[in-house]
Amino acid sequence: MPRKVVFTATGAPEVLTVRETPLPQPGPGELRIRVQALGLNRAEALYRAGTYLEQPQLPATPGYEAAGTVDAVGEGVTGFRIGDAVDSVPAFDQNDYGVYATHALVPARAAVHRPAHLSAVQGAATWMPYLTAYGALAEDGHLRPGDHVLLTAAASSVGLAAIRIVVAVTD
Image (cartoon, rainbow, N blue to C red; front, side, top):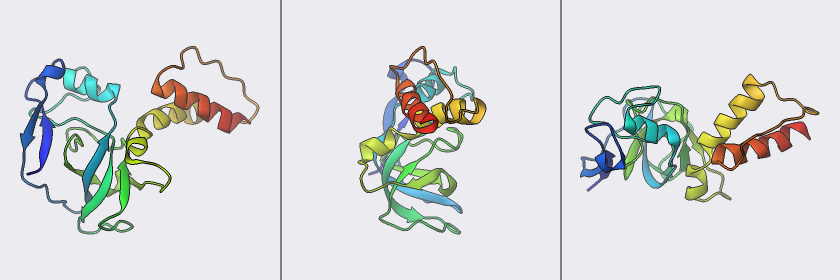
């Protein structure tokens, strides 16, 4: 039986429970992923605590990043087929989609094919830190070749991603 993580009240991790659920069916524009790995991010912890940008609509299932294989494709979806290795990208509202589950629905627009050289664990842990760092540095900060950057804290996943992005863009 499929399972998902649910919380019915905001708070510490203890509010999380695992529930058996019916197998979700993808609607138009959606994929169903058989989840192999999850990314654990500050955004999801804040969402669970009720202190994120969006307030959870209870009961809620957290999660932005998942890696797995496509096991169902909704109407109108192109570019994906059953068996494809994919990752979900944090490009949706957790109130609409939460990926802490054995089988998660995601909008096809928020799924990417995982390169063969990356494991499911690597795929699930990549998108949030790299998109956060890239957005701040390249998009908002207009980082260009030859620029100098001072990173005052680089021990987190976003900090480590920022170092790699700075090196890649400024070299």
